[in-house]
Image 1 (tube, rainbow, N blue to C red):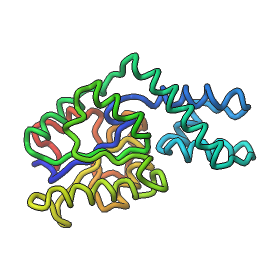
Image 2 (spheres, rainbow, N blue to C red):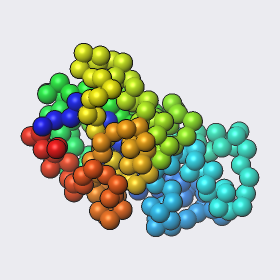
Image 3 (spheres, helix red, strand yellow):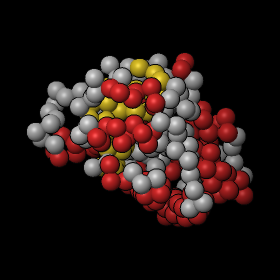
Length: 224
């Protein structure tokens, strides 16, 4: 059985860009004495959008950050990130095939991500999967990052509006997530959640409706 629609997270679900995000954050923050370890990143920062990640870094260091400086930091990170990903990124095993399979079944697809649109679009185009997604909700579109449900609510509502003959408020819509914050966000939007253990062990993903170790496990309608 297939879901009525599927909303994908991006980082940690479609591509493994979290190490790139981490390194770019350190490039910017370490000269200011605010660098942190990979463990701290996974424990505290992963799942935040850039805006909230920079705010948290300043807060942890006991420093204030103005809106103007925050925007400069976000722009700086976006520029460095874009330069790095032009060298190529690798999708997670099974994800391209799953997206193609769902599209072939006529299942509406969207993305709900805490990344910037400028981070996401070049990678989707690189992987030749951008046109499979009818809606892409990013950090640019919502006031709060995950675990706030705003991005998933936005993606869900856009799908309901765009596919009135396929979807209604009772439709079973799934999110695919890799972080506890993402699961909480999707649940807050009333979605079912499949967690993929790309970024966290199963023990951290127990709020999801099901857990897989690879998205290839969802092939051939193996969802419910």
